[in-house]
Image (cartoon, rainbow, N blue to C red; front, side, top):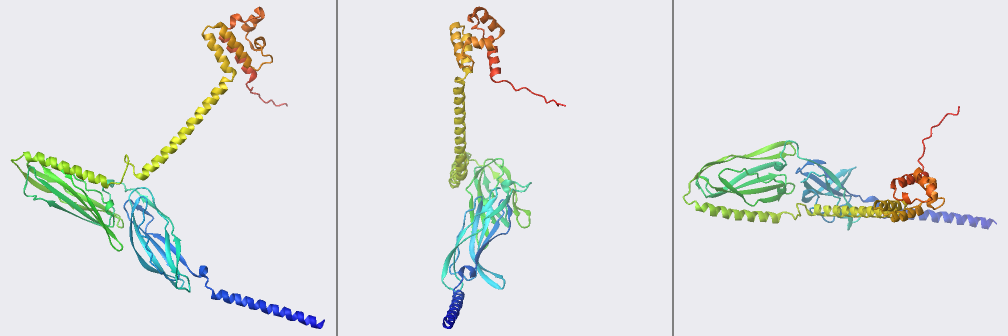
Length: 455
């Protein structure tokens, strides 16, 4: 007994030792094994320099990806499309973040967003492929990060400003140059003027076209406009050049009025102006007036070519609708037609059901009786009357019973005297009154009862 007890105690002690060794081994393995999901940090941030902007006012969107290790490959998704806005993408830059005594390396992507309509825009969520090693390792592993979607509220052009001339920019330079000699002009001559604007902090698509004032005794023919964007490392500028050809048709002195160009500074919140001074030109006579017609015809042909080129460069549209607007209008049109067709089918079905119910009712046969009396067909009226009686819910399905229960005094008197209604088949009004009495009997009108206090 002593030996068996001692043996049991030894086995218990050995089991405890084995258990403790297993726990220690598990803890050792856990410590030596990298805890990738818990240790490594990888996240993204999306920041806006403003959450609301005017039409054309740039919004800087910065997307930054941070990691607790390092990046084994670059991050360069390129430009993206934002509905209702133009976007400009700048090359990625390296950044870092210090937090809790730890420095995290990061890659920052910068976009400039230029809204071109009054509707709010949404900078979409992006799925970025990032390659970075796990903690304690050096081999890059691909990860997919989904960035946050951001909504930007768009404000309309402020009151008092012309929408056609509205331009948001950090600065603007305006110049013009002429093809031809302004000091030697005669009737029939053509001079070409080109006005160039270099604008900082916007894209060429948002620079409004030059507004040309009409001038007496001069025919004007516009030339093709040219726009260009110039992107730097962290900023953008653009230019627009508009041309106009002037045909001088009469001798004398003409004055081209001054031209004013404006832009709104987004940070100073001020409107700035740039002015081209007025120009006076002395037009001499020309003995060869026949050349005026040929020059005018040639300029008209060139103008049509310019218009055709501009129409080709414009986005495709149908009756003024863009592809997106046309698709939306088509979907809405199909939906309206579907609902309309469904409604019409319901209406037709309801009409048919009502017509079917009417033709199975006593009212239908009473109307046939009335129609027969209107045509002065006594025999037809008699048959129609008996057919109507057959449709009534009577204690006895006979004409005698109906007259006795619901007939008017005239009907009852005639039937009691002669036993026949031969002379009353055509008396529609008498039968209408009898029918009304029958219907009231079948569907009595609820009476209004007043409550009386029994006390």
